[in-house]
Length: 335
Ligand SMILES: *Cc1c(COP(=O)(O)O)cnc(C)c1O
Ligand code: SF4
Image (cartoon, rainbow, N blue to C red; front, side):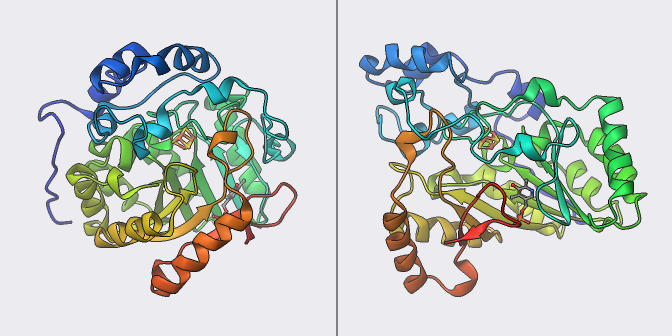
């Protein structure tokens, strides 16, 4: 493999060091970003439901003094979260009904999703797992063994998705070990990592990570989660470059969010920026109706209008699939 140039945010600090310095105090957020303090009391209230959390790398891409910044919107606790929201529930995808073992969600025929860790490096306010029972889904050694046994008994499963929590919070050694155990199960062919770290903590994509993904017979893909072109700075571009030089397929899933990226222009720019970095669009999700997320929601008719404009102006390969996740379906529902 070629040597991969790494750009580090703070040369000499590791991604683990950066993780120890997350911003999780709204006073500090307001101070660093010079935000209007009249929003602070509500932020403190909403934080009690779902903590504030972001990396300093992500923070560096937010415009100071702008309460409407599209990146800030995704992490800022707002008064609206504290209001009762009819039809917005804790488990909008009814994952609990498809949770045969702790840490395992088996909803679709041939692919299973693993809740690999119990936290993320960023707390996205619209996250459909913001109220997820992570404490009941911890993946210790015995749970992991149970999952391997389950997979051995389920011939139909050929793909395993490491999801979140944030799977790339596992160390390279842990990932390597899990891949080795999965590779020993003959019917498995693919492993997918659903991760937001290439966006919010790009230094995580180190050479060892790329080498680890290339050291197994299993075909590995990374599906990132990027909602706005402003999220892609030089460090994120370097992370994408590392992945593509290592030959790892990279896809993106975004969520259509009111006040963040709810225009055809924003979506078109996002997909062009991703493609410049060799990332292909995969899904554009409409919001899952999670309690606390109602202020991000968009009428389906408006989502369709945005999508029609995207379809008219994007080449087919840069048009993500507009989908909805519905409980009880055999796959995501195209809209
Ligand atoms: C989205 C999802 C998958 C993966 O579905 P793809 O359409 O293959 O990306 C698998 N399991 C669950 C529970 C999911 O929500
Ligand atoms: S990174 Fe993904 S799983 Fe984590 S809080 Fe954001 S949307 Fe949720």
